[in-house]
Image (tube, rainbow, N blue to C red; front, top):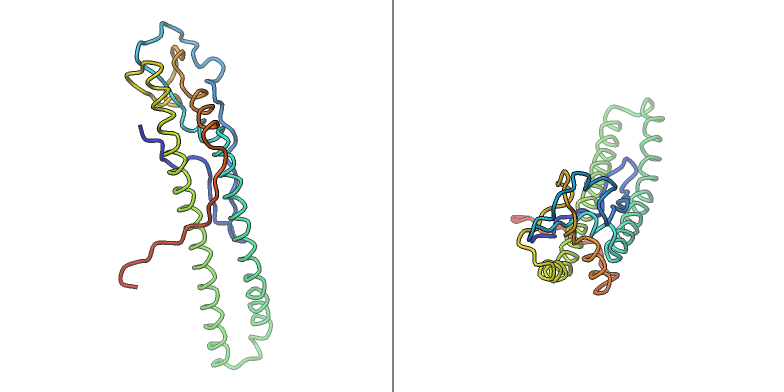
Length: 203
């Protein structure tokens, strides 16, 4: 059972920097009518919504909020650096006609280098947020695994299906709510910082 896919937090690189929006809570119980097909429960067949576990467990919600805070801080740093760069670009555009060709070329290249460095930094921060999100989801998945295993065993399951991909049927053995409750009893929050990017070989 692999619960380690990053499912909770989305990181976006916006024009002004970075913005992370928390994922809206997913129903812990199947939606109304999900079991409309009815039928008898299938012995040994159980279901679990990983998305609902990550979105509704307290630790997942806490991680989402904290990652958004880290992203907002990164965005604020980028905004602070972006403002003087924009000011210098505007000043260059205004005085460009009065400069010699050599001066325009020299100052233009210098501004271009600064812009490229800023864009690289913004991209690296976005990559760090994505990497951090993945690491956090892996940690939550590791904490959830024994909870899932316990519920799986107590319900005498022989097969665990992703509830979100099941079209319909008897949902008597849906472990999602039980796993959320078990995970909440085990852990409710976690602390972490933005992960550094791995060093590239040869650099």
